Image (cartoon, rainbow, N blue to C red; front, side, top):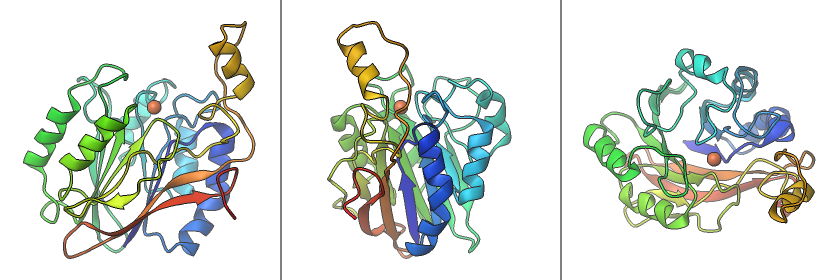
Length: 267
Ligand SMILES: [Fe+2]
């Protein structure tokens, strides 16, 4: 059982790279289940739309996760309650539309839990993510409630992500960070068997400032006249992790970074 997790998709080019290549990549890499964080997938680079979600599902994506930009395209607030395969961070302050955890069944009847969480440091206000995680593991258990568990931790700082990785060690198949748009070179299996990477990176054009047009971004840093951030369209790298899962333990046999195309590709 192989799960592909792809980091934050940015803008129209990011979406196109997914819809043009994902089915082929699924076949080539023998992937059984695909999770994508798509909170930056809208043309403006913030939020996502119903059409984007549907195009992704039609391209082989099984579950979409999000983060701080989840509500930036207002239409998603209505859509999320109707679409089981779309998650928002579980620890948003309630009441909030949608949900942050669901158990999915694959074609081969494998049960995969997907938990979407958001960090507290330098992020929008949300419930304490460590308390939310503790509450989660008190209520759900790998091999009892699902065969495998993937945690998308949407957060800004590496220490918080590291800590959440260790908290879920032995309790999740994969813990992977999102939000910073820069892939970290630390994919590994933690001591108790959980696959971990601090950040999956983005599915976007890396000739940019975290996916946004670099000239405009530099102008903003220099406080020159500038417009709102907008995505750097162009040559896209798909970036994420692939985890090989162990049916006996529910944990990871192997984890590797996944990089396809664009500036980060070595091929
Ligand atoms: Fe984010």
